[in-house]
Image (tube, rainbow, N blue to C red; front, side, top):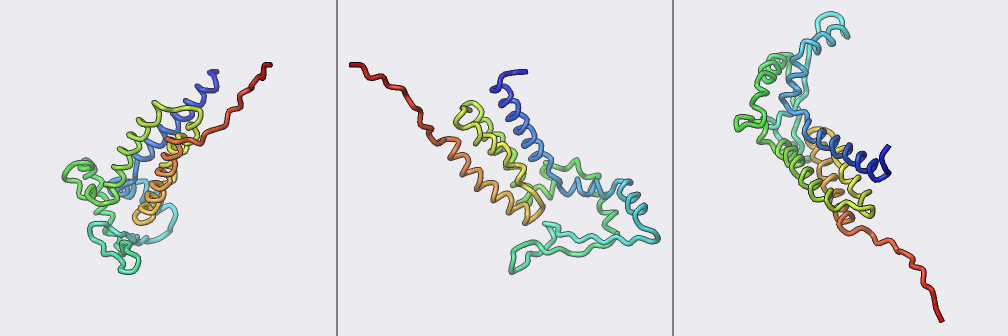
Length: 190
């Protein structure tokens, strides 16, 4: 086994890799469509229920939904089982992801998700070269921030905002770690 310092570096490396993977693997409309369009989904529905099954989807498509005037959140609407055809079409269009033709990529949520990936990478490039015993715990907490980002829509928006606030606090602590008093033994001669 390596030294304690090597073990710490490995654990931080693992946390950074997991954080980056989580940020890059967000579940967008194309991925949701792929999951619903898969034959396994309908098989699981038919295995779970007997008789004729009528599917209803409660969705708030960002491009077509209105905002609630009180909360500001997108209002969900009910869509019938015909959405299964829409999911099949949308799942085939996943090659548009990240291109100028990706209409979902223009939503604020998708832009924020992409920005998190860039900002996380930049933050790690800043932190890792100046890592020390004094700031290591703050670096670890910063690397774990993607774990706090959860949900979809307004829930995800709120968790991203909370993570940004925590990031600002932790970056300040990382850059200016509390000074630990060091005792120096003095010998009085004379």
